[in-house]
Amino acid sequence: MKEIKFDELRTIQMDILQNVHEFCLKHHIKYSLAYGTLLGAVRHGGYIPWDDDIDIAMLRPDYEKFMQEYKDDVYKFVECRLDKEVHIGFGKVEDTRTIVIESGNTKNLGVSIDVFPIDDLRDTYEDSIKYFKSFKWNWLIRKAKYRELSIVKSFSKKIAVSLLKVVCFPFSVHSLTLKNIKRALKNEKSHSKYVGLICDVNVFTREVMERSIWSEYQPISFEGKTFIAVKDTDSYLTCLYGDYMKLPPKEQQIPKHDFEAICWK
Image (cartoon, one colour):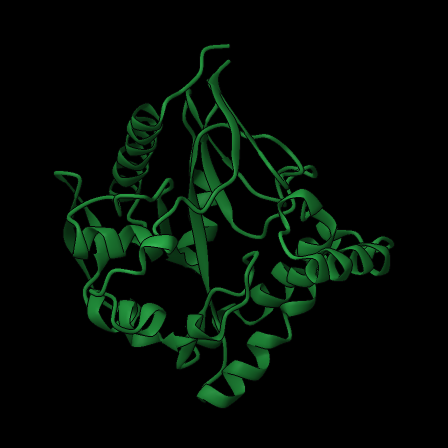
């Protein structure tokens, strides 16, 4: 298999994003660049220099429509409801000609971009936080089961992770993730004042934000190409990152994924 270098990885990701963008426009599906990708677009005009992935997000109804309708000869949408070996509660669009071997994965997919569903929460911030935190158990079990001890640096954390692995052994991450998605879908038409990402691998309360942020969209430039983002990028990025125009310390300017190998099949 031929190795894929960092620059080529980004080229493949950009091709996937372009394909998804064109599909969403054609099928009237609203999406937004999200997380570090939107931060990169605003602060750097493209990728954050040390970033190694692309994120987009959609309100749950658009996400469900995308999952049901997206088809392509080269790219494939994957999620736990479509593949029992995939244990994540959000989607990925992968390039099926490639393979990525990454520490902690239950199944090695191709080079991909992440597609996150944004779900209804509650009508008050306090109730939304409480509801949001109720999804944490799934996240803890996944972390415990698939966290590699070799990448845990401190001895105390190695002990804690080892104990969690024993406690969480009887639980199925896949079934818990499916239950979380079912819970989210039951709440889908509540049109709550607050929304957030509750089916991800991480559960951070900063994800809780007002639905109004997701009410309007605008074109935005990313790596010299035009995509779509929420119009109120300032509120979105402030909610997630605080002073988002400030660069993190040098020691934090590193890729967030632990890729062992990225190759063409």
